[in-house]
Image (cartoon, rainbow, N blue to C red; front, side):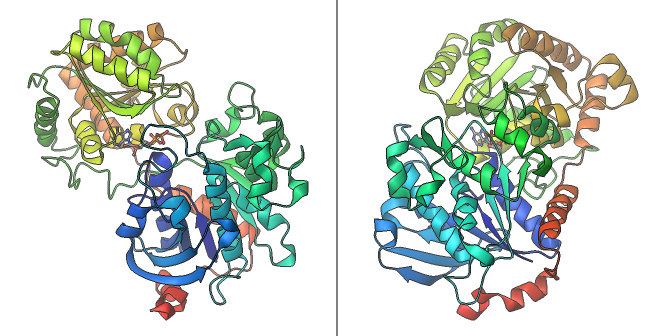
Length: 502
Ligand code: ADP
């Protein structure tokens, strides 16, 4: 079962959010089940640098008018999975973010960047680029790879089946129609039954329209996106494709996110021996300039500061949270006005609120380990990983009941506490009042140490590892390619063209 897994982010090579974590852990779990997984990632400068065992597999002189393109093969640094990077210096080697420049503006050529990436993916899958390697199946992710199934549709008998995973419908890859001719696509694709979306080009629609199977990252979100509230205008098409759509919950990679072995935190701990968590809390308070107080309730908001994550509601609630006596740490980046609001709130309440604008892996681990409550509301949430990690660290997530948050966190109602099923806190409506009510409940329980310990133990005992979910993806693959052999990983490696290439 040769699978080309196409993603624009793979941890630790390139990451802006959960997509990167999933694109690292899921292929690894599938490889352990015997699928021959090959990753494809744009050749961002840092990603090329961090890739191990690099070889130039192929050089194309002037692909799609973007200048020279090289296909670099190598291995991911941690999981040692085979990876190809599409090295097109004019499109991918630049300082700034993966999708935006240093000022936070989308790169003006994002359409061309990910069209080229998708064309390379399709040619590779069809066996036209690397020796006799071709894919039995292509698994494409998010809008960045949405064109892959569309390109493959026109490729005749050799076309491998496609699975398309939507990690977040809010990011659609929508571009002006006049860019269409520069994307190297068949003219007939620009139509209502193709990838045209209200007069624009939609990469996401292309993926939804032309893939054999569709998945999204939680069962609840798979239902929600069929409605106007969550479908982002694509609900009609998604309803039409509903027989081919399935929600498979994301997993957590406990090799990276487990307080018993985490290398980023000052003290390790387990559910049974939680003493190290106190040290982590003290370190977090110190790092963020708050009083080192073991009894204070340390509330952590760590997210992209966007509408999705209700950052505006959190910002508006900060004075009230400070009045409640809790300590609050804010870590993240996103919409500039929200970043400023958070920074100002911290300046107004230096004893209670600390803010750090930025995306820092080490601090993410420290806060998950040191926090008491993860404030993690969302207007919509396809799956969400942070709340899964928080539970494992005994930091109780406080979420809005939506999408994957609904599927993974059990609200500490009286009956859930009594039955030992509660793992966090949840509220229903979008707004400051319901969120603050819920936080009030959480803070009240935090003042009852025995009860809190019980909740922590329950949360820490949850297992969201990839095993079951990876098996469901493999079943999906096997349904599409019944004849492909699933072999033990050792055999797969022995047959790999990477090994032949040296
Ligand atoms: P999303 O993908 O929508 O941003 P997820 O919860 O699925 O949300 O994944 C977020 C990922 O990014 C998690 O790995 C989380 O630990 C990490 N993260 C979020 N904010 C930060 C930050 N400010 N610094 C470092 N890592 C962060």
